[in-house]
Amino acid sequence: MKVRVFNIGGITQDYSLDLEKGVTSYEAPNAYGKTSLVRALISLLTSSIKAEDLLNVFADSGYIEVELDNKLYYRRIKRIKNGLSEDKNLIMDDDRALLLTYFSPENRLVTQILSGDGNVEWFISATSKINEIKAKKEELQKLLTAEINARDDLQKKYNNIREIQAKIRAIDEEIDKLEKERESSSNIVAKTTYTITLTRQNKINEILNKIKVKKDELANLEFALKKIEEEIQNKESKVSPDIKTQLQKELEEINEKLKLKTYDRSELEIELKVLERVLEEVDESDRHHLDMCNVCGSKVDPSIWKERAEIISRELRDKTSLLDSLRNDIIGLQKRKEEIDLRLKELQTLENEIARLKAKKEELINRIGSVKFQIDDLERQKRETEERFNKSESLSGAIATSDDSTSILKRIEELRKKREEYEYELQLLGVPSSILEELKEKEEHIEQLQKKVDELQVEYIKRLTKAREEFNRISNQLLRKFEFDMEAEIDGNYRLIVRRKGAIIDIKKLSSSERTTLALILVLSALRAYFKTPYFIIDESAMTFDQKRFNRLLEYLTEIADYVIVTRSSENTEIKTLPPKQIEISS
Image (cartoon, rainbow, N blue to C red; front, side):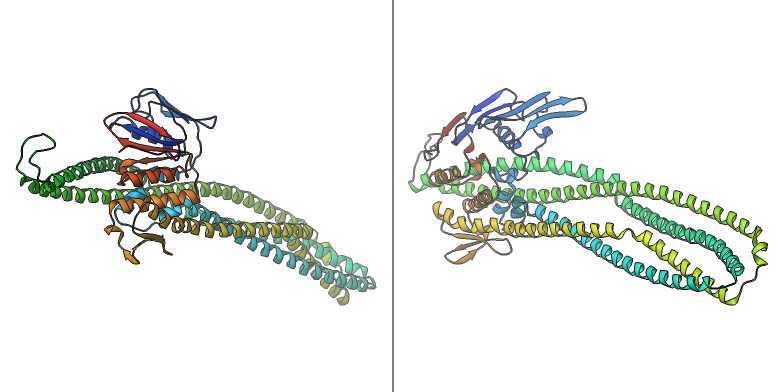
């Protein structure tokens, strides 16, 4: 694997590495670019690391290139007038890489486990992407419910059509019978006159029915418009530019605080290691009653070693307490940062919903205008028809009709009016064959959705349990491999449980080496269960292993990733790559 980096973070010159498969030890002094190189490598696995977090603040352009398996992956960044432009070809784009490819004191999981918090449900959810599966399942479930409701509505509509068709057939049979009776009547003049009168009235009634339908439609549209305006007003009251600006400002402040506190924590950890080393040398000098200082070579009173050991121990306790406080502050800031990110996403969702509702409002306003125009036109038709009928009313009023003929005509007209109402209802309900075809399509879609929901449910349960089972499977194997006298598992509540000789131990009472090992095993189990990475980076400062354990760890990591990179601080710069099964990293 070939790596080239230029103007990324603290790397301001063209920097290249040629790595072989196996373990690469990368030693360099502090502020030499180790962190920048690590960030550059991780940025080719996830776009969560933005261009502005990569490019050197004083540079106009920069790049990251990795040639892996004869393929070139890159991020090329240029500074332009209004910001940055970027051309990229990532190995993958998965934000889980931030948790699973770089094991260091900055890793959120390491910070949490070191603080003694054993709740790892968030870690399993994040690395298994179970929330995405759950959200997708809930979305499909909503679609399925909507489709089932739509199918039921269609079935009800189809049943109504069949009932109306049966009623129309019955009316037709009765009209046919009455028409035959009417034809036998001798009073043709009376029948004709009454027919004309009823025809006129039917025309007016037809217009009145259409006016009523349009007014009902107008009332429904105006009611829908009122509801949408209320919903827009309600959502706009929840979205304030001041709140969004305030949240973004707070997020920037939190990021700056995290940066400062992370730096302070790293400095403290280095100081603690130095003090621990000095304390070991003082204790060793005290045990052998040495009368010469190993540092300056001057003569000393052997009794002074105990006093020096007490001073160093006291300083160690003070700095350890300060380190714990810093770690707790970092956890609190990270939690607040997640809350702000979630709130900003919610505000963006509300803004999108308001835009959609406003578009719907404009559509309703246009439809209301169209319906009002149609009502005015029908009112005009009604007035003109009534005027025409009134002028000719004297002609029909002089014609007499018999009681029997009038009764038959009246009944026929009632039936025809009823038939027209049924036919109008049929027009509103639709064509039966089209509804049957739509019903068939709905049933097929429901079956497909149900199948997808069932598949997501299986995947949901599978992912929920896989990381936990993988951890429980390999945890004790690795603990024995690393020669730790304890057992670990994740219980049903997704909390880390540690036992020693059968007794449960509070994680806070474990040594830092044991706690770091538990965090590492969690990462390794997630890698085996969900995530395949071409390279894994580990900062030696995160591990408090002795050399034997550390070599065993590196040997195991070569089974997880082809390239394992170990970063460590040193006064000299040295890059050494060893193939698998030949790991002998010098202390």
